[in-house]
Image (cartoon, rainbow, N blue to C red; front, side):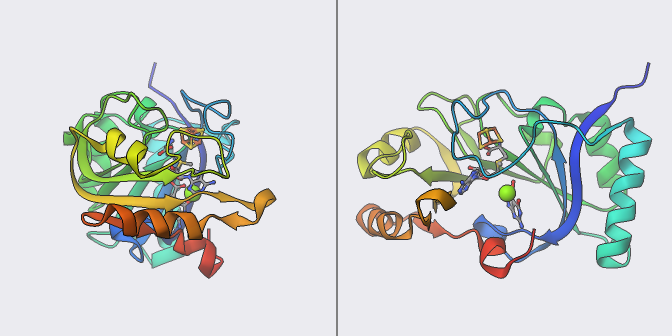
Length: 214
Ligand SMILES: C[S@@+](CC[C@H](N)C(=O)[O-])C[C@H]1O[C@@H](n2cnc3c(N)ncnc32)[C@H](O)[C@@H]1O
Ligand SMILES: Nc1nc2[nH]cc(C(=O)O)c2c(=O)[nH]1
Ligand code: SF4
Ligand SMILES: [Mg+2]
């Protein structure tokens, strides 16, 4: 029987975060996560229930429809961001090959808790949620700075340095944690910490939230 993908949503927007912020993109958000809200109580995404359960052809048809509505078609080089939930649980070779054949440049947002086959993607963003994680290389490491206001693995600059030691990424970002209940992103402490850390660290802002797009 053909493999099915559990999908939460597919939408057209701009990549909001990291080094590719501002790039037009189709987001393919998978349902399901291997960490979950106990590990990430501030997770800003509902990934629990699949809205679609689709085989490869059905998934490609939905992606094409969204690209047509958002960008007038599957424009060569258009970014496709596989996210979730945890996309590495489902994103596989047949889907990667078929999307590339349609001209997409594939990016993945992973929590890095399990190894990612980098040959499946053209850009890999890793955002670890636990001090021990598996995927130590990629295009960007995007650590959420949980700081003092939010429980998490990155209370200060030393914790950030430890987590990033023995990793090989093209870019290193600290991203503010957006917790609406405590007043939104903790820009103050994340900016202070980026200034303490110095290069190669940079601030990542969730620009889509600033712009009011998905
Ligand atoms: C919802 S996650 C899905 C991908 C993957 N599970 C992960 O954690 O990287 C997408 C991105 O949003 C970030 N994120 C989640 N909740 C956030 C929040 N409240 N504020 C800022 N970034 C958040 C994650 O760190 C990750 O980089
Ligand atoms: N615009 C936009 N950019 C994003 N970059 C990473 C996101 C994610 O949820 O994985 C995200 C998202 O949800 N929206
Ligand atoms: S690993 Fe990612 S999707 Fe899963 S709960 Fe944490 S932030 Fe949310
Ligand atoms: Mg998001």
